[in-house]
Image (cartoon, rainbow, N blue to C red; front, side, top):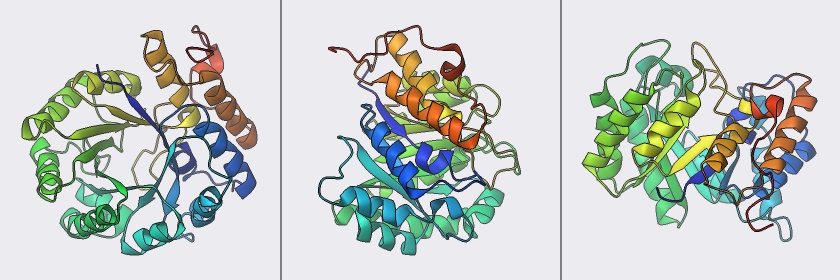
Length: 307
């Protein structure tokens, strides 16, 4: 199995639905600790309307901070989510290193999330992806609600693959499937990612699962068996799209890394740092987070291999 990439999305997906505002300085501390843990990518925030999503109002400032000399937090790539051309423009101006953007395969979710139909969103996302790539930026595109939708129900695989084909036709090779509603099951995951590999064996596939019905880690394993190399997760299992019918948290980063390390993978990541961030987040919000390792503790050595 190829070396896996861990993309920590907690500062964006984990916080976006929280009502209690997180101070800028606290976000800086969490992001720096996450980036220093050995994970490969940290998603700092999203470039959205701050009136609709106040938790993301300081995204530009966060990127500007970490772009300043001496503020670089470890070796992790700093990613940002953009939904439209304005967001891309903001991201280009403040130091985003990797742009994430996507289209929902669900008509209802797409309209609630972006105000556009899937086809309208696709017509805007592809030129944005090309623009960012032409500027030398890393770009990842996604299909959201790829495994089902709380509003529209099951999503036909052909609809997901049609969007993937459009991405491939535009020359974009880093593609994520997001289980926005948490409806995925392992068999479905293997079949859909397998179908993408049949379209193009060179695709850099990413998975993003929500743990709504308790299958998050099982789906991650199924994705890995299908050739997925990059996995997205959030500290403490926080998060959820505010525009889904039943928002629920992401796969917990500590749980995912702990599982991988038990199988001898990604021993370079400092699990103790991830646990400390998740514990700090839980203390800040004053509640117990969904992650299991926070409660049960680890049965692998916290220290990265070689230490």
